[in-house]
Picture 1 (cartoon, rainbow, N blue to C red):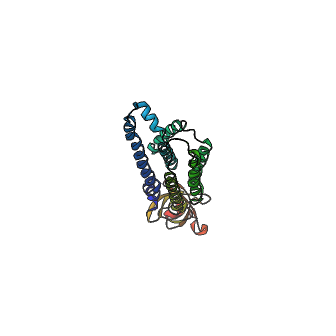
Picture 2 (cartoon, rainbow, N blue to C red; picture 1 turned 60 degrees about the vertical axis):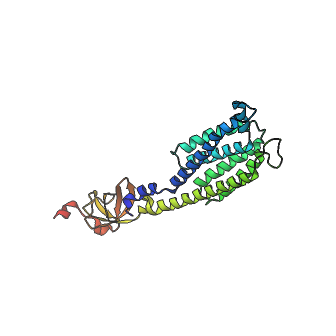
Picture 3 (tube, one colour; picture 1 turned 90 degrees about the vertical axis):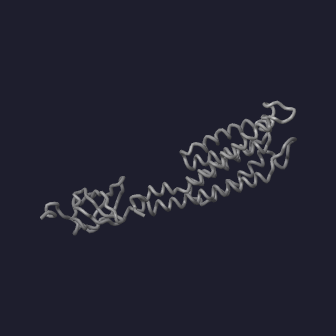
Length: 268
């Protein structure tokens, strides 16, 4: 791969973009399910539309799905900013979740544990924990949900299915672990193929550098600037990259005794 296009191609192959697109589609499918199910709830015998929708929203399983949409949507927006749709859906789902949950008399301590789970998942993106925090986030999500919905000490009315909680907790853990591993691999990619991998590499002067000129790096012709204290070198001089500024390389000499030359003598 040519060094000039390494970072550009990396962006096109960014695995986080694929993960974000997949979760965006899943989030939209979940929201579509919620929207499409409203007419059925509104048409329930013996209830008007408003009461039917309100009753349906107070089903713990629906409230749980709203929390999952909010969790996934906001996480994807933070993991891959700029997609917009998951963040928007997550925000709407979060508002609906809080409104619907207020009618279930939940244990709000569970919400604090859910917030902790979300924080751990986000931290796993920033830190080199290699998925450990994602596993902790999944466990926190399961515990927080069970506490929030009083699972095991049920209240009268519809009950949240524990299997749904365990399943979504596993999905969250797998998602966080996958994204964390992708982030670690992309960081290594940048080190090997990005600007960091270019620092210290050797190049060969194609023209006199006085101090600007052209060099060959990775089989390509690059613009280069010779950094002080040497002010000029001859073509063929081996140089070392010390910095990259856009498409211009900052270089210095490796062998000062053979590299020091004046532009005048280069033309004689």
